[in-house]
Image (tube, rainbow, N blue to C red; front, top):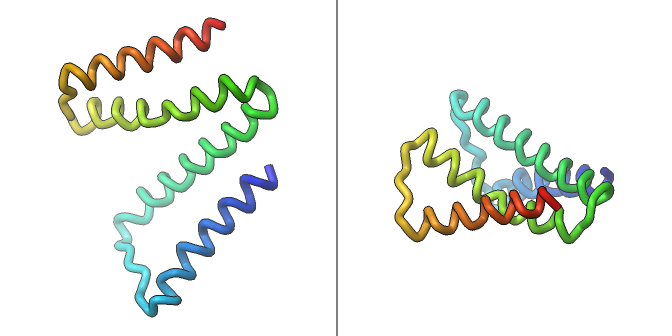
Length: 106
C-alpha cells in the first residue's frame, strides 16, 4: 500500500507544482469540486484495488482485467450520456465482456 500512497502523493505534488512553475493559476469552479473529488476517489479506489488484487490473485489475470477499465467508461457513456456504439464497437465490447466472463470462470 506504500506504493499507492507514494504514487498518489507524487501525482498531487505534480498537479500543484506544474502550474506554480509555469506561474499560472489552478482554476476550478466551486461546482466542479465535488466531481473532481469523486474522480480522484474513484481513481484511488481503482489503484488500491489493483494493488490488493495483485497481492492476492494471479498477476496475469489481474493485469488483463485491469486493462479492461475502458469498458466501464464506454458503459457509462452509453448509459449516462446516451452515446451510440457502431457495429464494430459493439462487437469489441461484447468480445471484451466475454473475455472477462471466461477469465472469471477460471
